[in-house]
Image 1 (spheres, helix red, strand yellow):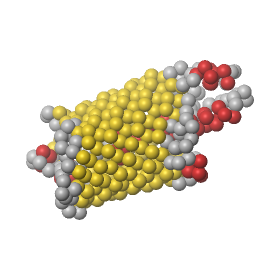
Image 2 (cartoon, helix red, strand yellow; image 1 turned 45 degrees about the vertical axis):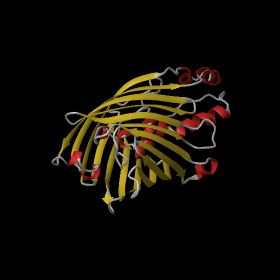
Image 3 (cartoon, helix red, strand yellow; image 1 turned 30 degrees about the horizontal axis):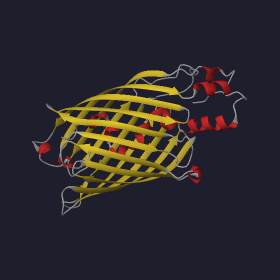
Length: 329
């Protein structure tokens, strides 16, 4: 988004707001997209209840360590299976990005069609055959903090004087299929799109319609180890695209079934219609002890911005209401 600034705005404020603009991929699209490798439900509602356990997950992302007022996102989610093959999910998140802020909540209802005879309740998720569909309703609140300060510094700029919060409703849909280790899914979020009222009509939507395509396969190396290559492709109506290539290794303890571990490497290519092109490297790791899950990710931007910050840190804490030796997707 482009905002016309007056000459009265100080270089400090301009720098801060340009920082916001540089992060429009986070603010305009889906701030918790970057946390999907801890919980695929965050980008595809059809994952709600795809497994037979109930999952609670808290995630926090701190972007650009070492930079003041850098973006951060915190989310809390739940998803689980109900009787009659119905799945239920919900999440809330808070995203802060310089002077901009965004909160949202979503409720999901999913329906799962088992394609194998009873295996869904006896074997690991990777051995199931299942087709899932879901519909989500989402409510956004987008606004600007420290409005009075910004309006004083930008006196005379009409765009900066009209900074009312935006409350918007949106709809997400998703489909997901899994079969004996293979999995794929497609979801479309923000089907209604949302524009800020004080921007010109030609401006791109604040919350554009965005698609997510997931493809992967879990290979069991033996009874305790698994290898899972996958890719995630994100695209929106404004021409922005992101391709993630992932490789995940998981291992259950041979001596104590209460413990499990995993490590993953994510290679990300961000493309913003030719204008915003970056490469990221994101190593992640996690462990499970009984019903508790812990995860850590550290993102490194392979561009000039990396010289001015210490990367991005993401943390995850999860809890399940049943015992499983695998992390949920």
